[in-house]
Image (cartoon, each protein chain N blue to C red):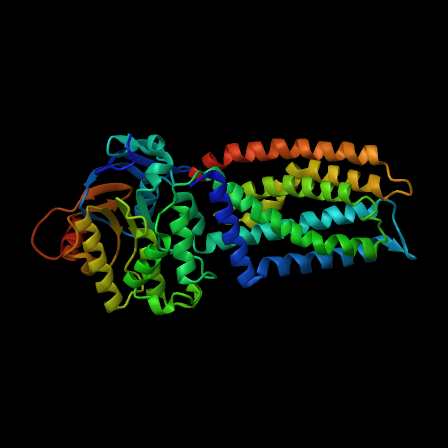
Length: 226
Length: 234
């Protein structure tokens, strides 16, 4: 079976499982909306949002909801030890990683489809003024976050303190992704959008993605064997 | 190295978890067509040894040889000749019995997927529940499904961790018959169990794991459990 056929088979299975339970999407969405409400109470005064706050709120909400989704996706594989069954299959372990990564990325996209319009509405952020650049920033940021998150969540799947360890390990490593996403988005939200700065941050995110995906593909097999 | 093999050899296999030694120089062989029982108290290293045989854990010292090669040399093709049934059953409760089998059949790159799935459902006596979620099954039904999942690709090496736990008499007899058929086909099996009566007539040899070491259970008079007790008291 080819590398991409295996990856597609795994992501299709993950989406089928999620479509049956809808547990991860609903939990992540509710959590994201709660996050935004907290930010709305804390950062909006007399109808005015603190400068650049919308960009930060968007990316912090995505990161927090993403961590929740990552934890649950791998809890599901741990409960019946199905992760071991995947690793036992005569398929490249990197292709298993890519399948899980694509599943996490798809969940992040579903969260973003709800969170982005809500941030635009609640904080008056003009997120749709340059839609393609915004989509590029969201896609590149989500790829980087999902790439590292999938690797760490898989490595921690059998650890007793995985709930505490995942954010502790994940957030410091993905700080460049969050900074790139926030600065790139903020550049689009000012009275005059700074497209050159937004593009520069997008390129930075793409570079992070290349490094993160390569390192994750490289380390997944040895990390899973022991 | 070809993917297939007819012997499994543990040569001085040790495994540490931090400073704790789970296995200490385990050495023995299993040949095609043999069923070997791994006996021992909880925490004696049986599941660790199965995980090493499954290539999911690397030994800290010593090596495991599949025929003439090692797990590193065999890679993915070697994993395709191994079937494992863990204490946790390696099936997705949200998916139906047929979807579980189909997913793993495709993951193993098997041909005639639908025919194999139907055959496996038949052998698991689950044809009439094929489209029910596996999570709605009883322990015995899930165990039968999990066993057929592990056997879908007709593995040479079968690793079974406590396969009789929670089974009623009918399911237990069916599992014994299924294992006997696999042995006849030329599969070799390593089975950990505390249900010694269930495997009494099935095993060709047994090893007792004590403090990480594997001691062969001597042939002699009495049942498997009697011999096991005598070994523990020796």
